[in-house]
Image 1 (cartoon, helix red, strand yellow):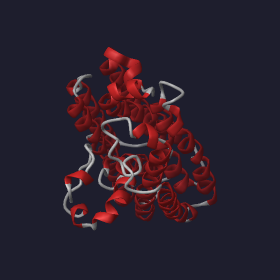
Image 2 (cartoon, one colour):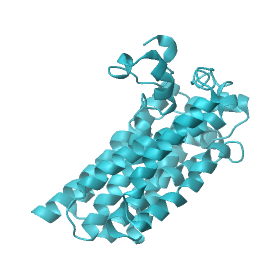
Image 3 (tube, one colour):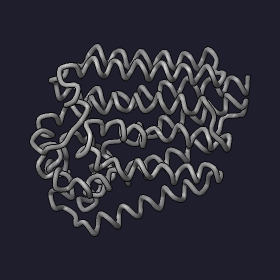
Amino acid sequence: MSSAALLPDSSAQGFWGRLPASWMPYVQLARLDRPVGWQLLLAPCLSATCLAAINHAEKPHFGLLVLFAIGSIAMRGAGSTLNDFIDRDIDAKVERTRGRPLASGQVTPRAVLIFLMAQCLIGLCVLLSLNPYSIVLGFVSLLPVAVYPFMKRITSWPQAVLGLAFSWGALIGWSAVSGELAAPAFWLYGSCILWTIGYDTIYAIMDRKYDVEAGVKSTALLFGEHVVAGVALLYFGAVLLAEIALLSAGAGVVGQLGLVAFGAHLARQVRRLHGDEEAQALQLFRSNALAGFLLFGGLLAENVLFYFV
C-alpha cells in the first residue's frame, strides 16, 4: 500500500495492505482500516444484550452478538460514508482529513452514494432479523444518524448528537432480548452517551486548530483549557449511570468487576490526558475500544455464570 493511500489516523496493515489499490478508497470510506469506530458502536449493543439476558434470567444470546457485530461494521461504515459525503468541502480544508477519498477526488460522489446504499442494505438485513419492536427502534435511530454530520456547523455539542446515535445500540440490544425497553436500558443508554461525548471530545482535540479555520464547532473547543476536567466529569457520569443500570438489572459481582475495570480504564485516560498533545489524544481515543469491551466482558461472564453455573 502506498503511503499516499494512508490517512494520518489509519492503522491499516496486514490484510488491508494486500488489497488492490482500487479498493482502498472504499476501505477508507467505511473506516475499515480504523476498526475502533465500529468497536465503539458495537460495545453498547453487546453490553445491553448481556444485561437484558441477566435481567430476564436467560441464556447468553450469542447469535444476537454476532448479528450486532455485522450490523455495527456495516452501519459504522454507512455513517462514516455519509459524513464524508456531507463534509467533503470541509474535509478538503482540514489537514487530517484532506486525504479522505472524496475530499481528495479519489472517488466520485455518485460512487460514494452507491457504496452508502450497499452498506445500508447490509444493516437493513441485520435489523429485519430482529423482533418487530427492535425493527421500529432501529428505524428511529436514523434520525440522530442523519442530523449528526450537520451539527458541527450549528452547535458546540456535536459530540452529544454523536452520543445519541452511537449509543443507540444500548436500546436495540436490550429490546432484541426482551421485545421492549425498561429502566436499565435507558440508564445504560445515558451512560454510553456520556462516555461517547467524553471520548469524542478527546478525539476532537486533534482538530481544534483546523476546526477554527474551517468554522466548525466541538466540545474540545468549547471546554478550552478545561477539556481535561470536562472529560473527567463526563466519564464520572458514565460510570455512575452504568452502575445504576447494573443494579437495576440485577447484575452481580462478576458484572460489577467489569464495570470497575471500565471505570479504571476511563480514570487512567483522564490522568494521562493533556489538552495540547494530538498524538496522545488519538492514542487515548483508540483505547476506548478496550474500555467498552471490559464492561461487556464482565456482563457476558455474569450472564454465562448466572445461567450455566
